[in-house]
Length: 60
Image (cartoon, rainbow, N blue to C red; front, side, top):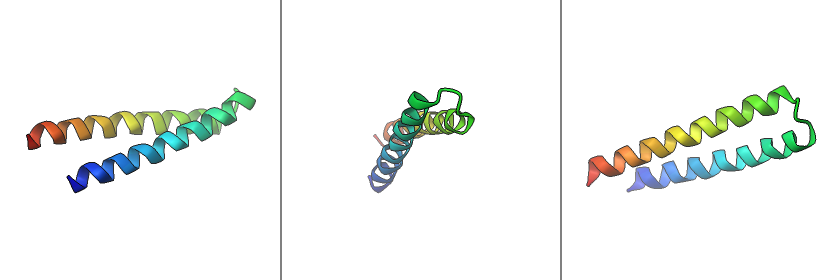
């Protein structure tokens, strides 16, 4: 379960990053760095959730 805790911490970190980039995009929708940062963060959250689900299925 320690791995789940670590994954949850990383998910929370990247969700905060997504919020940061959303705020930048609200002010400047053409900010390329924010668009790329948001995409990377959201994709990372998706992959971490998939990893978490796979781990939970495998350990049950």
